[in-house]
Picture (cartoon, rainbow, N blue to C red):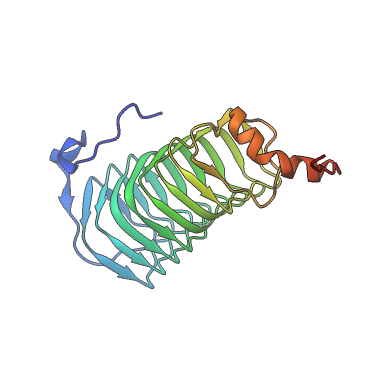
Length: 219
């Protein structure tokens, strides 16, 4: 897990080596120590591309195809990614700081040692994805689907979870205690292997009771 997530471009260990990007995105391209700054890309394809030690600041992606793309040691700041295809993409040792990720198809993706900080994730499909050592810090996760995914050592400090689905997910070392809100439409489904607080247990008690066929009434 990254011990420190830089908040500024100049704090990146490879900042001095970054070269500005020019031109369109291309499928199967290799981007090594490239800085994408403030560009807007729409309805194009970078499927199968590799991003190594890259920085993306203020970049807007709309309808961009990034299926099977690889992101290794990538820093994303204040981006807006909408309706992009990130299915089967691979993320490692990367950070997403601020910005909006909405309507993303990221099913089957693999995320290892990735930090999301201060982000809004809405209508993100992470079905059957594999997440290991991932942190969602001070994020809003709304209508995020982890169904049939595998989550290992994933934490949510300071984050709000609204309509987050975990049905069929396999959890190991998933710590939900730091979450500010847990709104799980699937109820207890998929929570096996998660760590929750006493307060969260009380909040989820009606769902657990319903699942067990228990009727709770006041005297």
